[in-house]
Image (cartoon, rainbow, N blue to C red; front, top):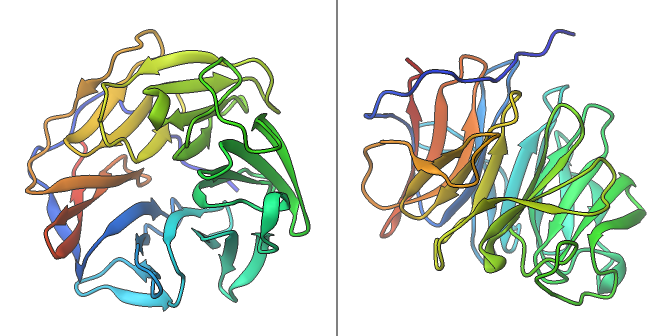
Amino acid sequence: MVFPTICPTGTWNSVGTLIGNSSSALKNVAVDLLSGSAYAVHFAVPNGQLLNVAVPYTAIASNLAGAWGTTVDHYSNVYVAYAVSVLKYPGGTLVAGGAGGQTSPGMAYGIFVDCFGAIYVTDHAYHRIQLWTNSSVGVTIIGSQNGTSGSGPNDLLAPIDVKLDQQGNIYVLDTNNNRIQKYPPGGGTGSTVGILPANSGANSLFVDDCGNFYVSQTSGIYQFTSVSGSGTLIPLTFTGTSNGIAFDAQMNLHINVNNGAVGSTYKYAYI
């Protein structure tokens, strides 16, 4: 299977196309690089939802209290993180967490699935990243096993999202420490590769295939290069706050926007 390479060197049309609406409190967005289908998460308690992006959205799964993260694997399976669990669709199979307590995520936020099917889970409540290679055992690879927070190179404070690059390096959006941390494959000693302003509202992360990364903040999408620790705002037009970021195989940029009681998904064409 040949998988598309995401390595933008250009820019994006500043005016997006509306591709999904009629929801509110949207969080992550994900795109299937093979089919082009897009998915979004509606955050609500108790009735969070995994949505197929369309006008209007259609629900793939409901009753997902506190749903936050979503991703798509190399075989077009869709994953959603909510509460202490991660489910895989089609089928809604439990693939991570679910048990409660410190053996499971205390609050599962951003997720990533590698080409081998291993699942990386951002545990917002216990300040850590867990690796799940089967549905019954999660291993803490970054942060504290007992849920202790901190600001050291190997500590996290209420992290939001996790992504991997092509070399297996792990990037963590450590929002409450106002930084993006990079770790070698499997964890280890972290280094700060991006600085965020205080109260940025950073909520999701994307790493491309050239070592650049992108952070969704409430004010918009910031692009960080592999040689610069400060982000540059991508000029996109929208009304509201941005949540979530994803690219399709043509490197078009997808974001969710919340504007009061209305949530929408926009696609910005790569040019």
